Image (cartoon, rainbow, N blue to C red; front, side):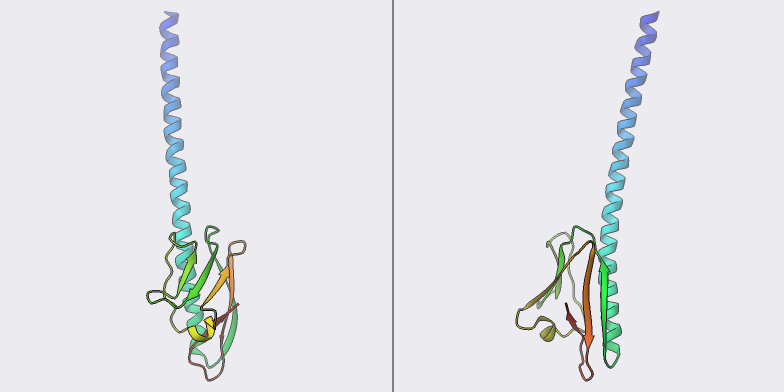
Length: 142
């Protein structure tokens, strides 16, 4: 009789351990997905906030504003270039897509270099938006 009782307890223990492993696996998977959704939301919020700030400066006769945006640490920086399908992108390319920024003066923003990049420092990207009196578009400067 002792053997049978010991055998039943061991099956119960094994089943409990398997259930714990399954629950922990689902928990880690859920946390990983939640972090991924958070990063995606942060990128979309960045795009929306940047465009809104550009539009605020663009709607006024003149102005200058230092702005700072939060981005996931996976993004090393953003670059503004004159592409046909988009005028800014994230570094490294591929994980998140860039887009089109309206109402920016690409000629003054890019200058002779052809591109302007901003580094992601401790999860934040800083830049200055500027529009002088008589200009029609906003210039982005470091």
